[in-house]
Structure formats: C-alpha cells, structure tokens
Length: 462
Image 1 (cartoon, rainbow, N blue to C red):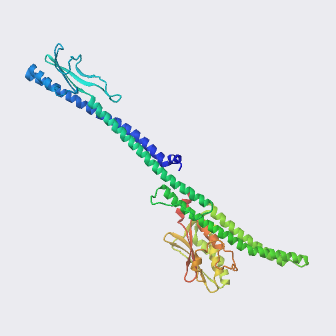
Image 2 (tube, rainbow, N blue to C red):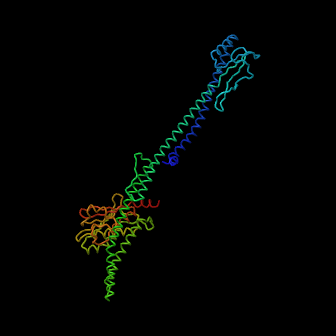
Image 3 (cartoon, helix red, strand yellow):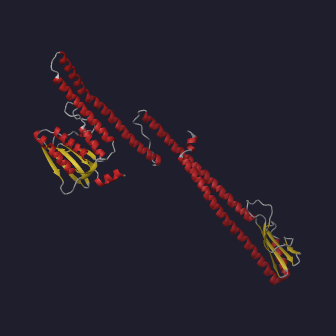
C-alpha cells in the first residue's frame, strides 16, 4: 500500500489539522492555567511569610527579646533544607538569631536569586520579607523551589498530555485514512472491472454507513441503471436489426424485380411503389427512434405551458371516434368535471402520447370491444388512462410493453413496429410522469400519472 496516499488522505489530513488546532488550544489553556497556578502558589507563599512575620512581632510584643530569640531558634532548628529562612537583627544590623546571618539592606519584599532548574521566566531563589518592629528587624523567607517544582510538573504534564493526544490523533487519522484508502482502492478496481465490460461488478457496502459507503451505494444504483441500459441497448440493437432486415430484404427484392421488368421492357411501377412503401416504413422507424432519443436526452422546456388533460382527451376522442366505429369498437370518453386535471407540459407531446395510447388500443382490440379514455384526479395526481376490454397482455409481457420494438408476437408478422409505447414512456419520463400497464379484467389499462403542475414547474425552474 502506498503510504504517501495514506498520509495524503482526507482523514489523516483532518486528524493533522485537528491535532494542530488542539495544540494551539492546549497552549493557550496551558498558559492560562500556568498563570493561575503560579499566582496561587505565589500568594500562598506570601501569606505564609506574612503570618510568620506577624507571629514574630506578637511574640516580641508579649514576651520580649528572650522569647523572640527562643522562637526564632525553634523555628529554624528543624528545617535544615534551607527552604525555611528566618533572621533576627538589632537596630544596628547586628545578627541575633536565625539562619540568615547578614542583615538585609531592604525593607518589604525581595527575591534573592540562586542557581535553579526553573523554566525560563520562573523566579529562582528565595522570597524574603524584611520588617522592623520596635528596635529589631525581622526577616522571613521561603525558597521558591517548591513552587517552581510544582510549575515544572504542571508544564511537563501538559506537554506529555499534548504529545500523547497529538500522536493518538495522528494514529487514529492514519488508521481511518488507511481504511478509506482500502475502500477507494476497491472502488477503483471495481470501476476498472466495469470499464472492461464486467457489468455485474458491484461495490461492497459495509455497515459503517460512512460517506464512502453512501457513495458506494449510489454508485451501485448507477451501475444497476447502466447495466439495465446496456441490456436494453443490446436488445434494442438486436431488435432494430431484426425489424429492419425484413423491409430491407423486401426493398432489395422489389428493386431487383423493377430492374428485371425494365430489362424486359415491362412497367416497373408496381415494384417501385412496393419499394417506396418499404422505404417509407424504414423512414418511419428511424424517425421514431430519433424522436425517442431526442426526447430522452433533451432537458429543454421551451414549449411548456399549463395543459388540461381533459382537452387532450376530448381531442383524441374526436380524432379516433370515426376510426373506432369503422372497426366496430366503441370509444368512450370519461372526464372529471369537478376538478381540473391541469399539468405543466408540452401540448404537442401530450397529443402524441394520447394518440399512441388510443391508437394502440384500437389496433389490438377486435370488433365489439370498448376502449375507454379517462382523465381524473386521484388525490392531487392528474391521470390520463386508456383502457379496453380486449384480449389484454399476458402478465409476463406487461412489464416490457414499453421497451422499444417489443411485441408479444415473436414472429413479428403483425402490424406496427413496437415503438408506439416506447415513445409514450419517453414522453412521460420527459414530463416527470410515470406510466404503468395493468390488467383491466379483461383487457389492458395504461395509466399515466403526472406530477402536480406547480411543483413540477418549480422543480424545472431551479
């Protein structure tokens, strides 16, 4: 595994940035804590020194010189570490008692520096306080070493804590980055397999449900769609080849016959008319394929407007009424009068959609059947429905009737080219609608459910 890719991964970089930010926050918090602790320790030392000064002055006031001498010697005796400092001098500066032998040349607070191991900026040495009372001078002090030791412990603890957290964060970032890299490498290998034609390859999705897993789930959905599209494309290509083979053969035969008639000085008009009819059939197929392709790939909505499905249904009823009667089929129109079935759509496309649905029903129904054209609102959903009580479509074929060139007659000897309902689906998808085929008990019912006009229009304007 490329370690450079691991370190360059987003999780590791995020962990590094988090560790750096934590370091800055810890530094600021540590400095604040250091100042608070130092002030607290300094104040505690000063309070102890002042209390002892007050005690010495009380002893001198109540017991005199002798009591003060005994008190000083008693206080200095058990503390041989030199952290406790005390001295007693007369008014001339003569040493009387204690472990400070030289009279101070100051009054109040003073620090006597010594060689220490303090952190840079720490006050090393002893903190002294000199005061005069009556005819005597007292000096009380404390070593700053315990305070510095406490501060050093605090600093070392903060540094250790910071280093541990920094390294732990980087280690966690490394592990997460390595884990993400493994998943990305799996994605890379899988997509490489797909690019080589293995359309069944899919990405693994773990139970972690992290961002990569969610992306993998979406990629798998797209791969499923791509696989289905490839399958449909292959089927369509095969169907086109199969459907075009017959008219091309007929056209070739008609052309050969016409040439033979010309050689025999006969009139080739009949053969040429047959050739023209076959070529027109081919042109119709190609025109329909191109139209379906343009609709499926176009996102233009320049000719959209508010269209009432009732107007579409009434126009189709008027168009096919005579055709249906000629075939002995009853064509009924049922519209919902209470509420308008208005959709945001291309008027010409909707006419084509309705035309194909009604024409398909009439073409495949025998005499004596009824074809019903219905517009209504189901809840808030506008629907255009074309149903019949004819022979219907078997259950195993019903899901495929919207596929290009699909016909239940496998011999393909029946009329039509199998593109009418494919064009219906393309127009429906272009309008954000869904088209479904149902068993009409008996017969077939095809329903196109449109989105609410205002919501679909708003979605297209975004």
